[in-house]
Length: 249
Ligand code: NAD
Image 1 (tube, rainbow, N blue to C red):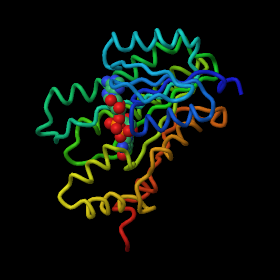
Image 2 (image 1 turned 180 degrees about the vertical axis):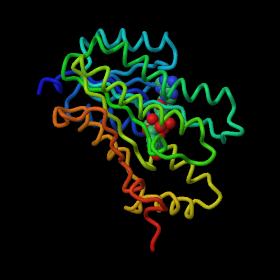
Image 3 (image 1 turned 30 degrees about the vertical axis):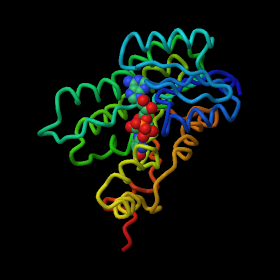
C-alpha cells in the first residue's frame, strides 16, 4: 500500500510507548525518524534526532530531517510532559504552561509544518490518554492538555481532510512504561499500588507499550482508511466503567 511505503516520524521515542511505536514500525520495515529530548536507542531502519518539540528551533530540526527523508506518511505525536502534578488550586503556572506547550501546542505546530511533506493518504496519530476523556484529582494541567489534544484531533481531522490526511488518536489506560513502573516501585506499598493500578481496568492488568503501538500502527495504516477524527481508548475496559472497572464484585 502506498501510504505505508514511506517514512514515519515518532516523537518522544527514547523510551516508553514512543519507543515501542518506533520499534514496531522499524520491525515492519518502515523508515523511522525517532525524535526525543534524549537520543533514542539505535534501531535498524531508524534515524535518531535530538530535538525539543516545544521550541521553534527543535521543530525546524525535525522539518529539516523530514526533508532529507523526502516525505512523511505517518506522524505520531507521542511526546508529553507528565510531571506538573497539582490540583486546580495549586498547579504552578510554570508547570501548567509547560504541560500545555509540550502536550497540546507543540503537536499543533509540528503537525502543520509537516503537512506540506505529507502526501494524500498519509496519517497523523496523536497519543492522548484516558485522562483526556475523564479527569483525575490533582492532575489538572495534564487532564486539560490531553482533553485539548482529544478535541484538537477532531479539529485536525476536519481541517486536514482537504489535504488528504486522516487524523486519529489513542487514549491509553495505565501502561507498563518505565515511568509507571518507577512510580509503582517508589510508592509506599508497591504491591498494593500495582494492584490498584491493575484494578482500574476491566482486564485487571496494565497494558503494554506494544499494545498501544499496535493500535497506533493500525490507525496509521491503510487498514484504517475510513477512520478520521476517532479516539480509540486502549484501556482494557477502564472507561467502560463508572467505577474501578476491574475491582472484583
Ligand atoms: P515517557 O515520559 O516515558 O516518555 C516520553 C518521552 O517524550 C520521553 O523520552 C521524553 O524525553 C520525551 N519528551 C518529553 N518532552 C519532549 C519534548 N519537549 N520534545 C521531545 N521529546 C520530549 O512517556 P510514556 O509514559 O511512554 O507516554 C507516552 C505518551 O503516552 C505520552 O503522550 C503520555 O501522555 C501518553 N500516555 C501514557 C500512559 C502511561 O501509562 N504511560 C497512559 C496514557 C497516556
